Length: 150
Image 1 (spheres, rainbow, N blue to C red):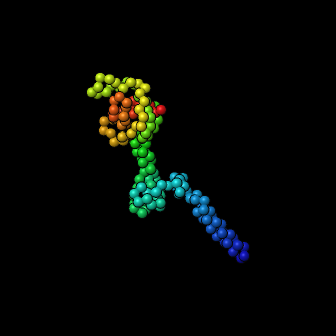
Image 2: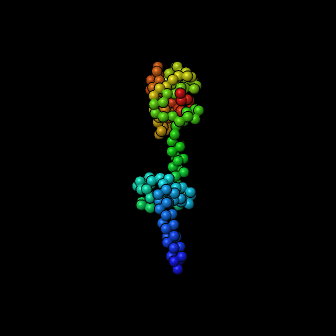
Image 3: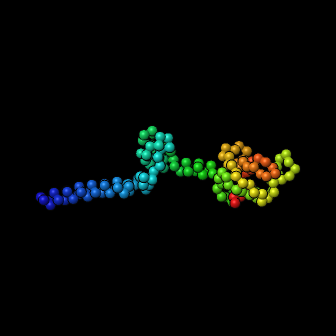
């Protein structure tokens, strides 16, 4: 009889220790293998109680569902890169990689011209995603495919 009581006490202690260990070490893993602490907050209500449902993440507080892979692809699509694939940022210095004709001018921007302090335009409709000021030409817009980062 005492052996059965000891065994039950041991199992209860082991179960409580395991639960405590899972909470302290934060190693509770979900179906996809992500740690619970690795899940992002809800983008709508910023709740920390999100969970996985297949490939989607769900917020139980506001019932918002989203796909984190689609958000990563959308963020990657918004990045502007130069001709070599380097990520450009506001304030970078770039060089022109080929001669560019300028509308309304008889001269052209020569290859190797340095452009300092660029400003990126993410919502450009005509493909010119860099606003800058070039010495001798003034303010103009360039396409990122014709420049390289220094």
